[in-house]
Image 1 (tube, rainbow, N blue to C red):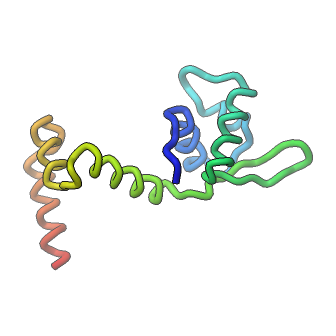
Image 2 (cartoon, rainbow, N blue to C red):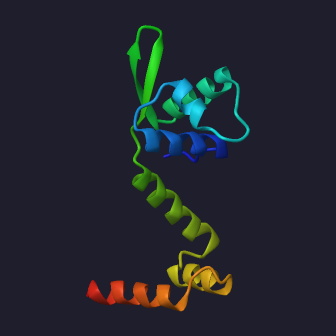
Length: 119
């Protein structure tokens, strides 16, 4: 699974949300920095080349749909981020969010309860 550019990732989030879409449908979902229709079409074709999307052809138009799930993408790239930025340590990940005050004590207790219930 190849890494996506920011714009490709944005388009994938739209396709995951819509499930099936024509280029014009994706374009309508982009709120800021709308690319030109042809630029967006090229981005989607790159996603196809990378194996993220496929399409159904209706004459000259294509309806695109994701073939990589959001969950599979998240798992792959979270694991990569943890490996590269946190020395493959989930403890370091949680510590990072605690130091940044992005996780509460209540959240940590819920995580501990989840871990303990799996035993």
